[in-house]
Length: 376
Image 1 (cartoon, rainbow, N blue to C red):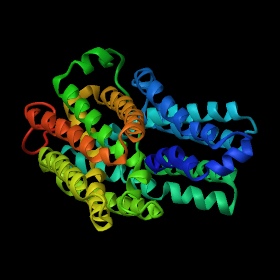
Image 2: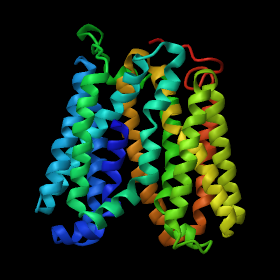
Image 3: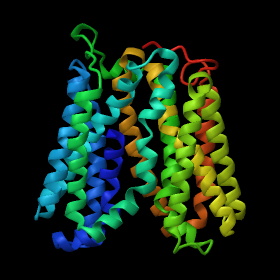
Image 4: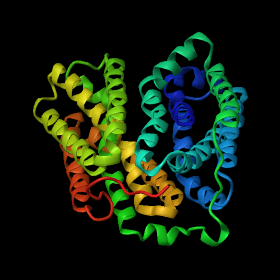
């Protein structure tokens, strides 16, 4: 539920841009910067907040992040000033950055080692649900009850989540002061570096195509069916995370290599036949299937590689992941303006093959072979 709120809060403005722009008296381009402010908040705050709170009780940190969503989504809902709204979005993003660095390690500690991967998959299921339905939900809310009430709904969900956490979620101690990890030693771990490199290239490739799916789909005559394409992607992603949950604890390496290989093959098919609408729809389903388990696979591999430094490593993942979102947007924009959307699949193919090569060579540390041997 926390993951769902993180992603839904981030993507909500995409379905509300006209209403937000009118309500704040700015252009839609300026209203769109509320998404950028959220991403920047996550990118800048994840590592320092994670390091600052690593000795705190885990449930306390989780509650702080959810209370932050209540505060800053409510502020967004009532704000009449553009820059106050942007500031609220920045701090909501900072809360999300802390949440993403916390959730994976928290879920892993609730179960024995042989179930850690499946626990991660369950904990991450809110992400593809929000990706599949966040923008349509935002559009519906904006039409039905107004954009401000849309953010109010996010606050109300967060209030319910606080109660749920207090009732159902066990607490765990943070790192002892003498055992608190520093950023440098964690970043120097070979497995951590390898996994983060895979994150960079995989998410660059994904976000380049995902961000600009509208102009690309127009090549196949589906420019007015972007909603259908995103729905297919989201449903397939849900199936992908279910498959990942079944496989990850005994076949993490194989599942990552298979996902990257299938994504590369999809990019190749789109390069050759992407103007065919049926090929595009089928390829989107395969793409969603490969992406659905990505967050679980990456975070499991990263936490395994980092050991006691898992929370810090996962905060680094937040930075790299959000950097790849921004990088994919910039790279896609350059390609769109200079070459056209037909250039997307070949570039996606190259980036994915680089990520696949890194994952394949990291058999000793980042993505080891065999059954996971993580410690609780």
